[in-house]
Image 1 (cartoon, protein in one colour):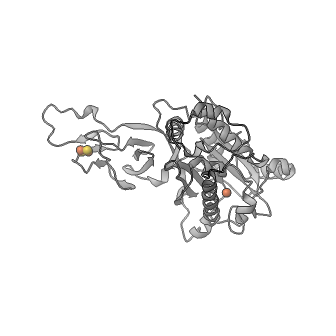
Image 2 (cartoon, helix red, strand yellow; image 1 turned 120 degrees about the vertical axis):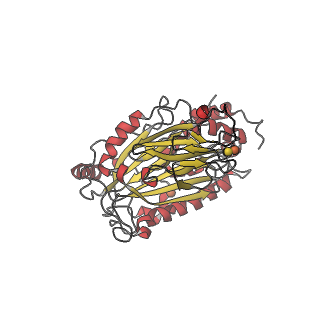
Image 3 (cartoon, protein in one colour; image 1 turned 90 degrees about the vertical axis):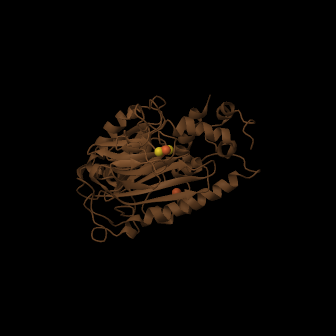
Length: 401
Ligand code: FES
Ligand SMILES: [Fe+2]
């Protein structure tokens, strides 16, 4: 599809409510470039968990589009996000996915930086060479309960409210001291929005996810069964969880890309957690004293979601890998002192969300192939897709002129 042909603002304004997107939004290269600038270069993006870089000097790479960032532990309480572009002639400095050491050495000509990005060594540069203004560039990096978020914007939307409010709600899980039990990429041959739209609705759950549907209600739990909702809410509070729920503020325009939500609901058929049989798969997290028969949905920014069960937390971070490729990066968090093989079996811990995400990947890729057809025409959304519709509304707002 030629990019000159598309007037993006007009297309975004013409898009009807509660209807799938026009094909151009999934295929046009100018639209994709605008998404990168307006969304991915402005929103807070989940990069990893603090337990993945436990010692000063530990680092991993976060990559998005043409950008690469070295996420490095610089002190007990500080994480830096250094742009992985050498200040000499621009080579990538770090090329492995992760590493450790207080010196970052560019392999091209040996320029050497410290964990704060300062240039510490550069050979044969002459007497009057000034290393002072040749530090690695950095982008904003903030923590919410041990979760590391990055923002490429010079002046990003403040994350303070999310840190405070979400941090307080998540405190009983003690995520800052939790540990990554497993992290896995699920790359898909589909535009990133098809993956997010799919995540935001459970219209597909009955046909696609028999494993998930055994323990999770598919329709809005508060409306479907208010008594069960109240009961579980009260029990959750008795188990040490926050009495607060946070409305999904995803769509707040002033907090562009910094919205968040924390929303609890009952599980069904006696399931205590998200597992093969609904039985616990890991020790209770943090200060939580018991299973309460429910779980909690999280939203942090537009492309990071989570599900907090009493015994583990699973995080989903979506990103584009091009116009028609995307990735869902899944992280399973358990209590910091839980030991694999003794306190949990990794296969059982990851079973539900692996099987569910593999199924999602299949249906999302089928969706992508259909949307690419000349015969594709956007159809109406169901009531069960209200949250995908909210995502699309937010998205179109971001894309308008
Ligand atoms: S490009 Fe890094 S040292 Fe030359
Ligand atoms: Fe799904």
